[in-house]
Image (cartoon, rainbow, N blue to C red; front, side, top):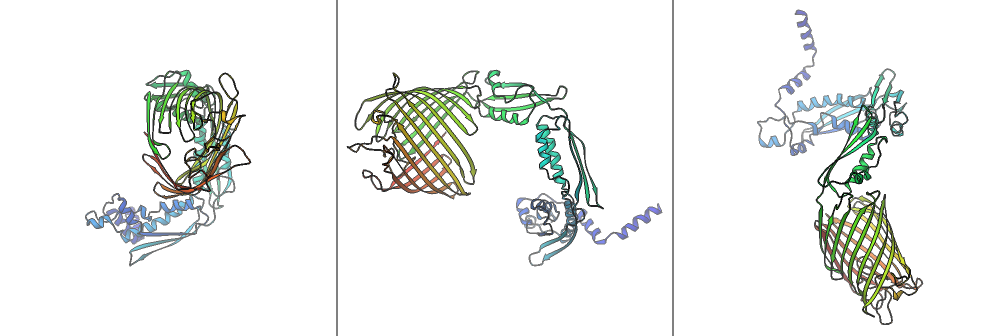
Length: 624
């Protein structure tokens, strides 16, 4: 008992009296409480922290050290009395004694943080100052990093069936944990995490680190890193079980979506592929995929739970355009008709220049996430400046998607009844094989979606009982949008077309080329540009060439403005092109009810029969 008493008093006497008072203050100070956002904001100016000498530490790692410090304003608790006035509770002032304790504690935190980045012999010279006018503190820590701890010996090893797995080897090769590098413990932990996660993702569900340690020799400033991962056996896919709620699809049909076969090595990326394929079908409202490893036989069962969407979906679109007037779209989609996943849609569009009804019966293909067959039937009526026409269509399309490419081939019989300014009650019929190849790449940059796209369309026929004329027609279009900043872009649009035939005037005007209007050359009436006959009537062209350049700038919110220059025409002789040009200003607003566009355009050197005056084009619309 006397011996213990002597020991206690000895240490009490040696204890720094100042630190003892600080300790007593912390223990008996009023209880801290969680700060509101306003209080945290008020504390942000309490202390300014200056860290110097960390040039060899990456900026993000310096920020981590700074964020961890007790004296960081964001970490300071409220030390004011809970019985103080409302004003002091809202804007609490830290105690000077408390600030000094946190200041001294932060030195130890800095040294601890530096060790994780390989600096075990760092030293700190610090001082704390207060501005008596503002009552704000400045804590300065001058750091001498000292020698770095170097990885002198490195033993990284893969064991088990995954010893040659390229994904695991790549993680090791790209890691910062290398011989003669500075020991970085976060990089070491990241390496462990990446290796284990990748192993599990590849189906090594028994993977375990048989050895993982860091041996440090401070006297030599050296470290030995030992990391050995035994992957064990790679599991393989076994059964895929569909648990369906609602409409029940054939499992033979659903199995077409599987990107793997039984006994193939497990890969979590294939599960992600399966999830994406099924999500894009429009069949399901709820979908979950759960791998279930079996450690006994080293296989993985895949449990898929599905719940189907409502069978029928309706769409309604309303809008207005200067060229089209009031326009409306009504559609219905039967998402699934049978257990094979067939579906059906019908769409009706109506405006004063164009009306159409078209129905399609879609049959999923061998690869149903990319391939389909569509049986189509439709009728349309067009009433524009050069002609009016009623067209009836019956045909079939075969489509496929490969990456960013979409390919469609089809065969359609067209029956056309048309009137022009020259003649009325004309009839034509064409059995048209068609091919379309499209590419699109988009990227979201700031306010805009930029990128590029291209489309090539080919069709034609030879004279036969189902086609009254022989011709071939091709149209190529391209778009390119380049971001010049988060709120500025320049974009280009262009198209070119050609028709090969002996007599252009024998073809239906629905096949010939016309241009002009918002979608082509602004400043001119829709489809008002083409070659003319001796009476000044539009005849349509054998060739088409038009394009535009636009500079668009975000103004504020979802408003943007643009300036544009358009040029183009339809013509019959390549060596005699009479281009029409137009330019102007535009405004756009991405409203909650759909895009709104307003263009002020004016012709530049228009053809002799075209009026030279400003045009105002407006469009607004949405789909519900």
